Length: 463
Ligand SMILES: CC(=O)SCCNC(=O)CCNC(=O)[C@H](O)C(C)(C)COP(=O)(O)OP(=O)(O)OC[C@H]1O[C@@H](n2cnc3c(N)ncnc32)[C@H](O)[C@@H]1OP(=O)(O)O
Ligand SMILES: N[C@@H](CCO)C(=O)O
Image (cartoon, rainbow, N blue to C red):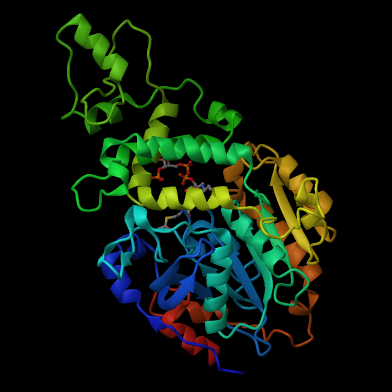
């Protein structure tokens, strides 16, 4: 095996020290990249990139499955696509070297608004430059080269991860670097609908007085209300009207749960006006106007659907940063695989079908019938125009997030595709030296057996 790859300084410990969100991710490696010039023209210096790997590289250094995470995901595939990871699953570490790299703008370890800018000693915050999916592709290459990877067997991603996968198809079209692509519930370019939802979510954050133009790191307040409202709006685009109807209907939240958890904050009305005020402002953060779920004769105005959204909003602010959310949503808006790829003098009509029709690799496109964000029609366009592609429909009622929920069907579709398009990784040709005792080996590791990374990885590649 050739071992001439660049190695980057491991800065996991120091980044975990300064970035509390990076600490949330189990067992990833964070390295320092000396410099990279972004699509916007700015250069990042001495910045972190986080990634996680499972399995080992084969002698040809090409048994790589590159997994691309979605908007609020991290490098830890086991955390959000866990059931697809394991022996005889799609992401089979006994056969493949599985890699997931945290993208720029995410708080979970790679360079983002929460990263300390070496030039100022403070987090980049709102001065973090615009990053794009094309930048992620460039950064990925540095990491993949440092891992001594010669080429990628398959790039797989859903939603924003699918956008990265589609950018891979285009960047490495007609090369041997990317052999196949799986894109789920995604788009070759951000639609007006997606951009508009992102705008709505950014405006939620902007309207929080604690946002303070993004300069909130040195205060004791974060724009939690705004970020929470943004997540609630986003969640509605990730699920479907019918899934909410089935799950919540007009059900009421548990009386005791509501009253006990907010007992301290509840204001009990003394006058009719105050009672009306309380009902009007119910749910307004920091006002004491919370649902008392009283036995009043007035009609109920607080439902389980609301408590679900509020719960999700609160949960989200504990694991995400508002400036990162803005940065990532702007990156999503810029996504367009046709950008700088079509000569407007030659292609005067919509360039997208033209670019898709040029793609050479086998593609599996998985669309979700009930997805209102990345519609099934958008997936059909990919399936129709990409010459060597298979389109599969996921009949889930869950909406867009079905790509994170319907593990069994996704696993089945992906495995079938990989076995058909990459048979040499499954037959006896010797391409892959199957790591028979993978599960046993992982269990024997000190880290609890979830994954293999850092020092343990050295053991595996030398196995
Ligand atoms: C460190 C990291 O990397 S974190 C990143 C991990 N996540 C990702 O990467 C992908 C993003 N994840 C997601 O988008 C989502 O988590 C999904 C789609 C995978 C699953 O969504 P979930 O929120 O887990 O599922 P679901 O919608 O069923 O909500 C369940 C939660 O809502 C709560 N809940 C359900 N109904 C109600 C209600 N009526 N009122 C209040 N709470 C409710 C449940 O108690 C449960 O709480 P819990 O999460 O504390 O266990
Ligand atoms: N639930 C997903 C949706 C975006 O694709 C996430 O939060 O990343």
